Image (cartoon, rainbow, N blue to C red; front, top):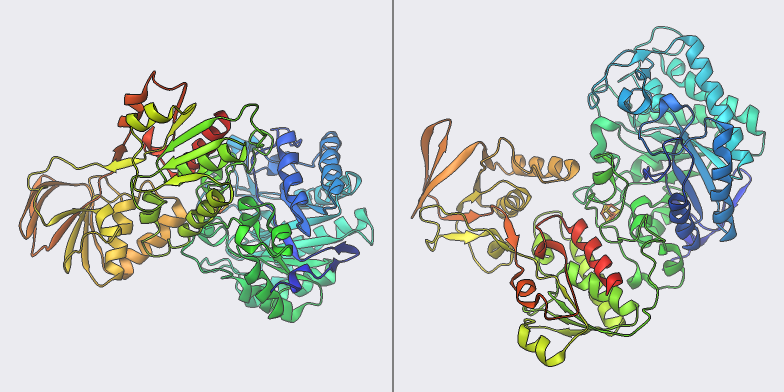
Length: 640
Ligand code: SF4
């Protein structure tokens, strides 16, 4: 099934063993002075071992004042080179090739990070940022061009195999390219030719400093998806100019900060959604073209290459989810690949909060050393209560360490609440994690006891050495008059298919679960109203997830009533208060309750002091996101 992805290819003089690329992803793992850390090196080393053809590092600042994140890599000073040399050496030890991505954030940063006012081609505030940038003078433009060249030379000396210049995602070079951000009237603004000048002069300066044979990749946002921004017809012209200036490959991404949901796309965006743009670029250049954009499966990568729409495939989040993807694909072990599910919780979700990235499905991403699974010194009998994702994860890690593991699930299948989370529109991919976890339990010989609730009697009779409580959460039922009527159902029961609802439905609670349940029902032809106490709905959702969910609700005419408190439910109606006025919705067939959950941890209370080691994880400890549940499950597996 897979041949083309494993065909070698050259970028300039650089020979790559296959066409699978880890694209740049900011990790926030580096020191604030731009030097790289052991954590950052171990993270890349894992991907080098995993068999990727090319690894491109995260955006690496060429100027301290051009940093966009506190803990990002930098190459603005010779002092930073030694740490980068250690990185390239470790990647090369495993036969990997590594390029560094060079960038300047321009207006997409803030003085809270750089200590100075941001700069840009024009003094226009980015819609997502708080500060208006200062317009760069021509002298400053020339200085930044030199800084790109100097950083590229440092990269070459530090052992990188290539450099990539970041001209996409709304950063400084992109700001010059785009009429969305560039309103200059000198030779760096106005016409397309003028707007490309900054990028061309950077390539020329880099080429002058690194020499003829050192590969230069260039990343662009082929389409910005903003009013007045770059279109594919613009970027086709730009790509030809970049090739002529000396670029050896074009890396085709999409979006800017304002359209972040198209830079790092959630599951609502189709796989390979931007491949067609790469294909357009490929028609007009003769250098290799790299496609990217929610390609999480090597089979999709293969078919994009076979369709001749690109020459290489970037699979960023797929590499966070499973660093071993190329090796597994090469060995035909496609079933063993742990896929990225497009949840955007651990990667961009954390980065947008200023945190270091991780991955929901793979808690060891970025913790390669800390989460290394070593054999246990002594084999123990470990019991896990609850077959949701946290329970399964803890069982897997404990079993990998050599323990005898028994997993107890009171229901008739594994997956818990995660199975329900996969029901709403665009969420089906969540099931791939359940399938993967189940296969691992099987492979590792974990004893799974379905339809069996772990209780004190079992513990007393079996006497395990350690018990992990992963019993999850149960829905919270508010104290509203009429809540016990037969027409009132829980969102969880609707999603599980246990309760049918009529044509007209009111969902009480506009958090992620309520809004997704509303979308699920509206997509199945129901007339739906959401009533939410707070000023907005989906406050607990990742921004990109929220964007597409609100769009879906709007397209399906779901009525959203915010800042409202439900007062009474009667047969056929619901009464709520908004702005001190009582209102009623009539002809309601069903009311769906989705006002949150509370931990289900009664077993933990009962077992206190009765077992040698007792660990509670996930929602059973405190109701949070799946990201925390998976990580705690992993930690528990290491701790027993
Ligand atoms: Fe993919 Fe979610 Fe992991 Fe991000 S956190 S890489 S979206 S699985």
